[in-house]
Image (tube, rainbow, N blue to C red; front, side):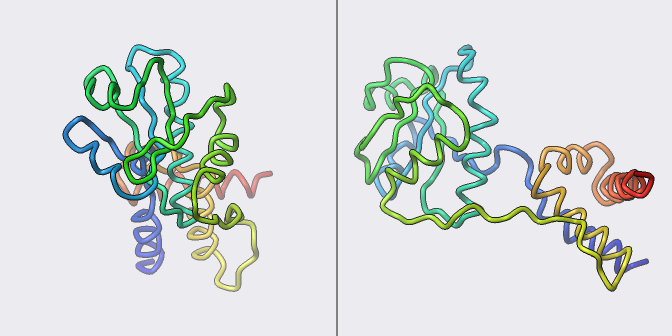
Length: 193
């Protein structure tokens, strides 16, 4: 009863909604890039390729953070922050740059704008050595505690493999209740199969 709800609440507390790991830079705070390593996406709101890159860029940020990377993943609306764009010689959108201690070390030249390609590039640019990607947390492992662990395991699995869904559930139904029903429903479906 109570333990279950508490377990869910704790699990829910770690659900991060999409895009929270991407830092937003502007002309006012762009000098933050003067220290450390940064992967920065200069974009324009009207640009189709920028829109396509956005969810990928969110995933890149979350993935690097999950691996304990020190590289800050950021984005700048170049149309609203012309000084930053001009300083970094941005001529087209999206432009992805790797900045180390205020100096643009490299610009991403590949047309492959998928998560793996971008992360591989960032890893090559960075002075740090990143661990390999963490394995996904599965919910299928049999458990001695049965239903409660099954639910918490499922929630953790959901958070790992489908953060958007977990996020949507928690936002749609209001926290615990929504996630509980979502999880119970998903477990129910698993049983039917």
